[in-house]
Image 1: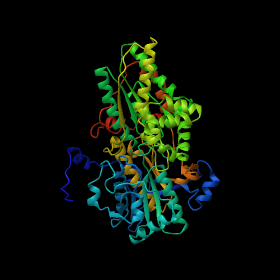
Image 2: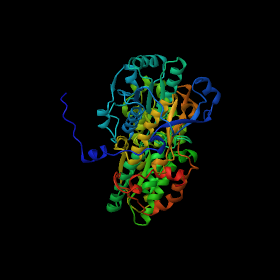
Image 3: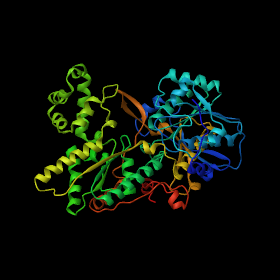
Image 4: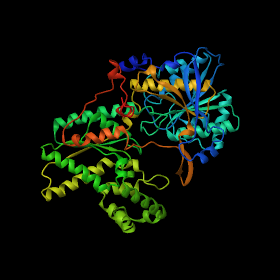
Length: 553
């Protein structure tokens, strides 16, 4: 393949010159100060038993040092794991600059297409020339990413072969909760066999569900939410101009509703469904639909036959009745796969309805044909429903339309209803990082280099107090075992980092809940506009509303 010379947009050229801000503690000689010793968030005995060499280590805070210690050249490996998130390149740039500051002869190796690259011995050296092409850019294309799980000793041993060959003594894994769980398992294994390889994790996911008392946010969340909020604001402006459509917008976020909540706080839509609230209130699908239809009707009474509805990607899994239906479908279709495939497609729906328990049969029969088909035909290799493929926004809008048609016959609804559908997901994963994510990610990478210099392993890089100016941020490291609990995965209890769902008692949800009734009836749209990279700090460096509310700013 012929490669043409790389060209850059005006923004790429300008962003290449941006120097990310760092916490003051990282701008000179650094020392690692040990704090309190730790234990896992739950299941302490089980977690300790599985991680005897890395469990219970202390929290680390990085502080300025009066003396600069001599450090030999470091050979470090880096892996991008899982889905893309804005700022990954800056984590690598910060790591590179950090190890070079420790010794100019330090070297950085990137493993190609995620953890699989470590096992397959596929890598590239990341030199200054390579790094400089990717500073402050979106995406993971510097080395690519992948979803191979590092879980088995044979994988660890195979990876160790190339690490030894390259004289790599530290490996940084940039990923989400599952990837950092794997990083912790790898750290424990290498410590157990005295491999001489440290493992450090960095918190990445646009979903926002890798956070806790120690890690206040995952990188990429800020940028992704700003990208989605810009487009939602544009749709709201169009909505308020044309005044004839209801826009149903599904937002990425896997299980948690953090993205939907943050985007609601930034744009003030007429309706935003929070999956965690649906589950807590034990709402049925019909009750969710009725809630939206009621808002449509109330706005129509005021002459407004338009609006916006935000729907989190994982909603279906949080509706208790739908969860029960999916569980029975999974079980039934796995057991009767051959029989099911013998039935004509036109008759499969009736066949399933006749075989399910009454409640699940009634619910399945009430679903639109397209969704019923997705539930029975679009299944993963294990035979399970692929919930992420369900067009929830179309499911909800179609059911709202049917309910409004029934209400019109009953003289309850006299307005007009026409729906438009959108799904925002991949658009935000590789956007050029906001100033916040550019700074935060660079600081995370630099922090990782300091943890390596301090001889730490099984830690996640941490940068806290990020609603303050960057020089006041606090950098350090958190033992990954501190965030773990035992969960059932693939029929087996396994140690995993505890996911953070939306806290219904937290300040962000309470702020949303206090205003949503007014947003439902009034047209109170906010138009955030595109991410600003240049200009006043209060415009360019603003963190998410979620972080501001959580920290009382």
